[in-house]
Image 1 (cartoon, rainbow, N blue to C red):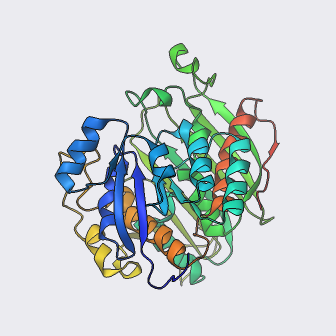
Image 2 (image 1 turned 30 degrees about the vertical axis):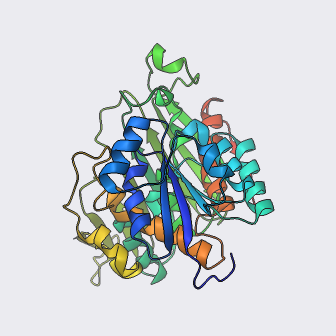
Image 3 (image 1 turned 60 degrees about the vertical axis):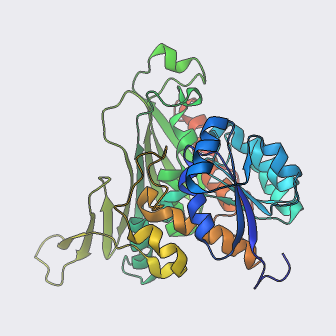
Length: 380
């Protein structure tokens, strides 16, 4: 994009059930010229537009793609549509942000990577887990070298999808696993190269029919490209009693961090100054990770500092403060927009997103083969 220091981005946001949490953040960002909203539910579209003052409204993505009034599209549509829609956005000459997962097949991942390159437009997967307060705190520890040598990584995502939209019914757990996988790969700055995954539990027959997946729970061991590192990931979607949680654990030689409960603090372990005769001793601290408005333009700081302001009439209940997923939403919007304005790749570009997503796709393939090792392709 020319005139990168002054050009403002014109963006359309597609899907308001969850996407409604993002539209006001785009509207507030100093790099945005105008925001359009799009949803196939015309009643929701008009209710939302009237309430929050969005005049540009669409019920069809194709109309946005044909228009020359938009530079970028943020897709917050159902998972089965992500691959096709992301490809179409990029091929239309527009930048594309897309909620997770990037796609559900390796073929679609390859197509999006190729489309990003051929179109010379940016693709960014909007992975919330790598912009939470908790992850940013652990990432800062890592950058300061506080962990020493990282020895092992663990992630988990527990969620029950009863009564969610029909496409979720029986979805393979590892096809929606980047919330658990991405913090591990982002922190270590590497990718997963091979996986062994085991399914567990019994799924109701009605949940097996749509995707042929028999497992409510899957656990995978990933070998990472850094040869000394491996990671364990557990994902649940159905018939398992456990509160919602996207957790990560980092075990290092000099420090470790565990995060196990959604509203709980981080547990930080550091090698104690005074050691006993046998076994290394650790000091244990509970840490509430701080918000990071210093990483955002002033116009967006409101969206993470006013955490208590919710709107019960909005479908996602976070439209006024944008603080969903532990403060990640404003960071995602800011990174996507700045990557366009600065004419650079975003932090989670197509290759990175494909590597993170392929890990889960290949894990599901392994689970369906009784835990057989599966090589995870690279998209470099």
